[in-house]
Amino acid sequence: MTSALITIRRPYSIVQAMTLARNSLLARARDTARESDEHFSVAFAGLVDAVECTFRNEETLMESARHPALRNQRQDNALLLNALHYAASQVEAGKISVGREVMTALPDLLSLHRFSTHQMLADRVTGPPVGPGARKGCLALNVAGRRTREGRR
Image (cartoon, rainbow, N blue to C red; front, side):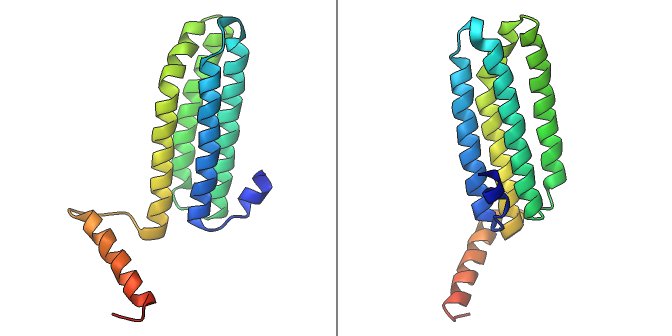
């Protein structure tokens, strides 16, 4: 599946692929949170591995699209992974409560992280909104694009 995703060049297709991967990751996080304490440490380690894999695939997609914000994305990924690896070491040492605390925040963090990733990709297509009334500027671009396609100015 990854090799097929890597060949995608259109930004909206990349966003779709990343959304599917993140939704799968969120489902895995929910499953991990439901694990009993005796199985939690193994499930948590598997979740950290899944987050790493998902982030690596997202970075590959962004690299294939020559996305200019790839470096920022890698920095964000590294920060989140660093925190997860620290928590994983605590969970391995028997501090299950640390992992449980992470599990309460992780879905929101992944969703926020996904939003910022999608925003970076959207900015690649439309350009970042600037100044007051930035939304109006986006609407004007959309109207201008429609007029051009329809042969009007």
